[in-house]
Image (tube, rainbow, N blue to C red; front, side, top):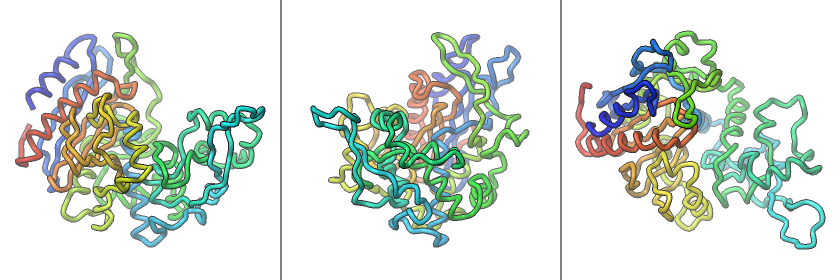
Amino acid sequence: MESFEAELARATDSDNPDILAAIGLVINSKGDTLYHHASGRQSLAPDAPPVDPCSTITLGSAGKFITHIAALQCVYRGLITLDEPVYTHLPELEKFDIISPNTDPHALTQSFTLRRPSKQITLRHLLTHSSGISYHDHPLVKEWSKSDVAAAIKPGDEAPLIVKMASMPLLYEPGDGWSYGSSILWTTILITRLTQQSMPQFVQESIFNPLGMTLSSYQPQSRPDVCARLLKMVRREGERLVPVDDIVQDLTCSVSDIGTILSDLISPSSKILADRSVELLFQPQFDSSSPALKDLRGDTEDYASPAGIPDTMENPPVNYSLVGLLAEGRLPLSYIPPGTVTWNGMPNVMWAMNKEKGVAMLFATQLLPVDDKRAVDVAMTFMRDAWAKFAQNVCFVTI
């Protein structure tokens, strides 16, 4: 791991660092820590202490896999199946039309058209981002939101904020495309309705408690112990890092807690998922000829940099599992091997796990914007060193 440690030291060791702090963790299927290294400072304050290797961090989208695990627990409990329509529990989705550009050159009204879908949305679609649901910043959805027809599915003022955020037309027939977006929000709503519990309560009882994840919370503001170990969020502005305030609003976990859950998922017997559910985490969900796979491989903006895929690479060897991006070949810049599942989050947090090799790893920093080039460069060095050292010959190392 010499290359990673040297590069991280250069990036963090100055009065005007490239990266405030970063942490690298490698853990095996037995829960043994194979590698754990940190460099930098806990904040930008002049008297800030060295970074705590077990800092708590905001995960952003890197924490969405926990929502997927919670959904699969609902499947195991018999509350829903992967392939039944979700409309019984999410009736709002049944109102969603498919939006398309209006190609009529003589059209004088909307720049889009709407039609009823012929397929129904399932939990599998939600978990693989193939439901047709995108984000409100998609150009067609933005046009729709300004139109009169938007009122047909827009929820009323009394609806929860999460429902308002996630209501929009579909971009394609469910299962016939891939678009990273608000499917995860609908999965969260589904879990709360199936379990009659809030998301924080259900995850605490069914995931955090069984694994002993004592420094993890969806409500970090209410946990002084979680906030006390927080690695401060910073943003790159020009040539300097500046503090980011009031960013801790969602899932926050300690580095060691993240290692615990990743280790459990690659272990011979998970404490939180049935064996069949664990298998689905590492199995491709899109057929080689599916339009969803074509879309996924053609839309690398959300995953190319943290996964280690060059911008110039066409048709990268990836698929999607029920929890994240699945490598079907070695990824060139990160050395992520086939069979590995990986994803990232906005503060440049990246995780990867490979059940066959019995290795999982985490690169953690708290730096905006997402896919910051300097952070990604250091992360790629960490990944290359870690896969080269631990993927073939797994042994216990004390750092």
